[in-house]
Image 1 (tube, helix red, strand yellow):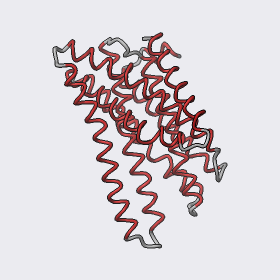
Image 2: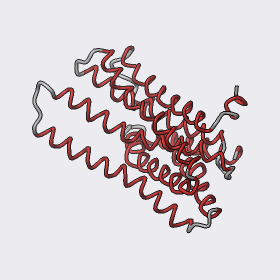
Image 3: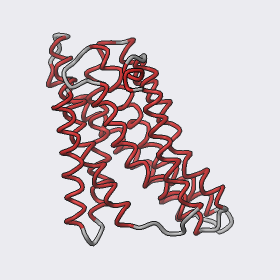
Length: 269
């Protein structure tokens, strides 16, 4: 089964991997059928672990191959990687600012009859915005395997997808369970909870296609994906996990996630 996956076209690999990450979002949203409240320690531990995986993946699976590829293409490697990395983080920063702007306007002009639906849209917009570059990161990681770069392997790309999938689980739950408490039916809450993850297979395929068709933008795209992921880690995952009263243990989960990804990347790279 593993050999079969390894021999697939990178675009197909990216599609399968991002369908997996969407499936984890769907699985997280499905908890609404079983629980009204989910254990916070488990969720925060998963967020901490995913943060560690994504930090390690940002360097070994994305930035390091980006530097190598830029040098091979006779580019100014530090400049290309800086621009890509900063652009990835800046995109999400601007997205958050836009979200907060509209959220504040809605809060001021909120009407009781449609407040729940507006909250749904804002929740989905926020999470979907973060899922687009995450799907892109997986697609770029699989697409870069084609060029045989150091650190760009099926194993490292798959672990990256796993890390993103792990942090998608709480995201699906974070939408569906509160909506259930607000009066939505279980089916409605599940539908909205999983919907944000559907952009990942789309952006994953686009990322792989771009890498394969336009080789010279690969260093930029790899760095872009790394910047977007570091922004998500710093702005969302670590603060959310550290809000737990057992924050020292949550920090250990981050270290464990980083170590697992580092070992796999170095050992299998």
